[in-house]
Amino acid sequence: MKLLEERIQKDGEVKSEGVLKVGLFLNHQMDIELLDQMGAEWARLFAGRPITKILTIEASGIGIACMAARHFGNVPVVFAKKAKSINLTGDQYQTRVQSFTHGRIFDVIVEKRLIQPTDHVLIIDDFMAMGAAMNGLLDICQEAGCTVEGIGIAVEKGFQPGGESLRERGYRVESLAIVDAMDPQTGQITFRH
Image 1 (tube, rainbow, N blue to C red):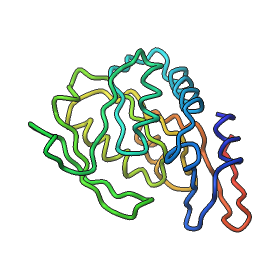
Image 2 (image 1 turned 180 degrees about the horizontal axis):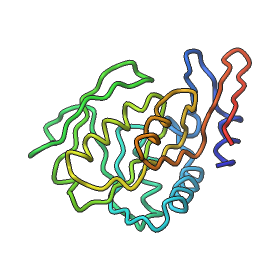
Image 3 (image 1 turned 90 degrees about the horizontal axis):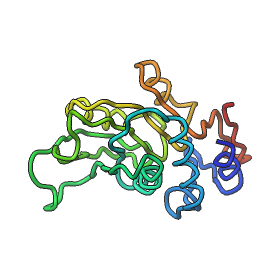
């Protein structure tokens, strides 16, 4: 998606250790118009798929998933929580996910009543590096017995194995921007076309 790539070039900041900071428009402060256009693009890419739910993981994926849901007929958005709380009741799906950005392992939890075997799920998130968050959400979907219609990623780090691994396993992954290389010295970002 050219618009997203241009915004990354303009306002993204390359940090050391493969970190791309996009907090000015994507995952700290959100550009709602950009997120809306991203949602429209995923709706175009997944047109004809019977999406009944969008699944993401807290926190950065929530805004993106909500904007995308509007373009799929306002389907519900379910987000996996990274911590137990008294608000979580009943039976739950639970898995562990290691965050590339935070360098921590999180237990992620979804109430079982929110994802059913009859659901057709689109998984959406802001970034994919190693694919740990996606694998965790896929574990939850597998346990729920639902159909995964695809995975939508805003920014994929193509120089890390997450996206390729999921594609090799047969998942349809639609990333709106794939970064093939980043240079923290010059700030140069190379996108896959």
